[in-house]
Image (cartoon, rainbow, N blue to C red; front, side, top):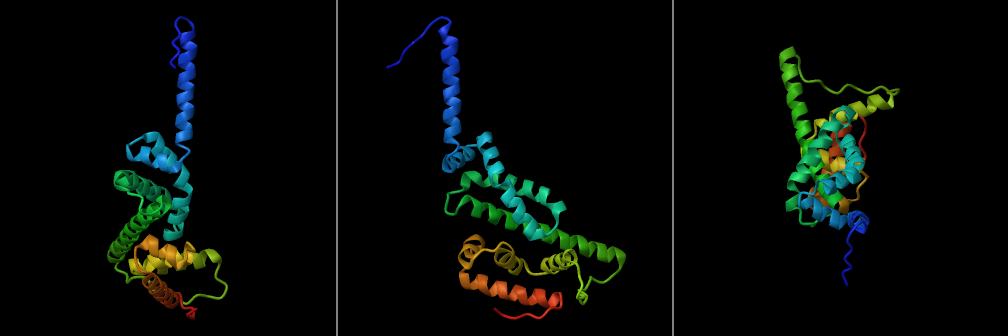
Length: 210
C-alpha cells in the first residue's frame, strides 16, 4: 500500500525517505561483496570504502617489500590507482586482499627495477664500481642490519625476492604464497630456499637449510 501525503507533511516524509535510503545504502555497503560490485560500477564512495578498509594492510605489505618508508605513500597510490582501473575485470577468483597483494607485488617489482637503474646511472656518473657487501660486525645495530638486508634483497632476481618476502617477511604459508604468486607450492619452496642462500652469502652469514 502506498500512502500519499500532501501539504506540510511532504517535507517530513521526504526527509524520512532520504534518511531511510541513506541508512539502506550504508547497510548495503557494509557487505563487502556489495561494496565491490558498486566499486566495479565506478561508485566513488564504494571505492573510497575499499581504500579505507585495505590502505593500512597494503601499506604494511609495501613497507616490508621495499624497506623504505619514504617510498610507501607513492607506491600505495599506484597500487590503488591500478586496482580501481582494473576493478571491472576482477572476477573474484581470489580474495580481494590477495588480488591487491599481487598488484602491490608488481608495483614493487617496478620500484626495485627503477632503483637498480638509478644506482647504475649514479655509479656511472661517479665512475665507481657497484657497491659490494662488506663483512658485518658482531655489534651491528638492528637498523643497519635491516638496511643491509634490503640492499641485498634488492639485488635478488624478482621471482626469488617475491617468494622470500611472501614467506619470510609476510609470514605466509606455502599455500597462501602459492596463491598470491601464482606458482606451484614446490616452486615457492625452491625460490624461498634459493633466496635465503643468496641473501646469507650477500650479508656473509652461514646458511642452514631448515
